Image 1 (cartoon, one colour):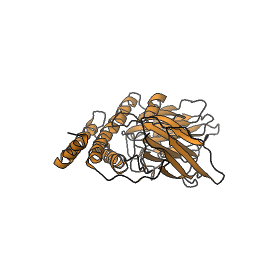
Image 2 (cartoon, rainbow, N blue to C red):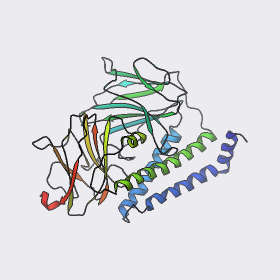
Image 3 (spheres, rainbow, N blue to C red):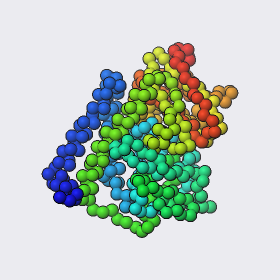
Length: 366
């Protein structure tokens, strides 16, 4: 029996769909992991997290899974979050393949940071999203009228070029804002450089493989970042440096130094974080839940950066994580959580000072 016939049989018999549903049910085991406190909030967020991963997976592996006719789409945003997603970022992604060549065109805009990366693997199949090529606005050639063109291909090209490897499968665009209210994002379009292409009609093979890719992604992503949280929990209320290799393997940016941690506070406690920034392009801090989703930055103060935080007289910064507003300008709200994860980033920094943390009584800050 040919591969196409096997996929057709699985779709016609309903086996492909049944296995998809069974695998989604099994993914719920991650919410019952011993690391997760027996608290309705953390469990409710865990099941919501799985639905968010499901939405992302369906879009990535089924709806926009054809690299011969890709569309650049938001893959991580206000209601789909993973891996300490940066609240200052606008993320875009598209499937690509080394069998094709692509052209990314548009306007640069005024957004503070713009970067393009190519990745291999997937959280479901390989447990990684290895960054294999990266181009950012330091070396990006921009036309006098503010337009940009980036070629994505295996063969070298003049101008802005992202080199693909034989296993490249994803294009990711990061745009970082210092202030979303004043900066204009880049407006970008992705097209085939080797000729226009229409998406192929849906067939049994694509559906079957897409459904399998979705469930592998939901399982793999949920388990990967839960294990990260488990490791962070061994050093509560600290922000130790995170492995640069592990960050790049998970899709991180080469020019970013990450500090990931686990926080846990009693109702009358606050976490004080102090740091003196080096000469760097950008820094930020954010608070996440146990699932490494950023807390809801649309409505609550859960993140600060070098443009939004208020410095001390000596140029250092003091951030306060607390359940209630202590009257400090750099308050980070826990949004009703008693524990979770957190992240600090230095971007394009020559040195990487360690943020210092300490737990104090909230009454001391008042």
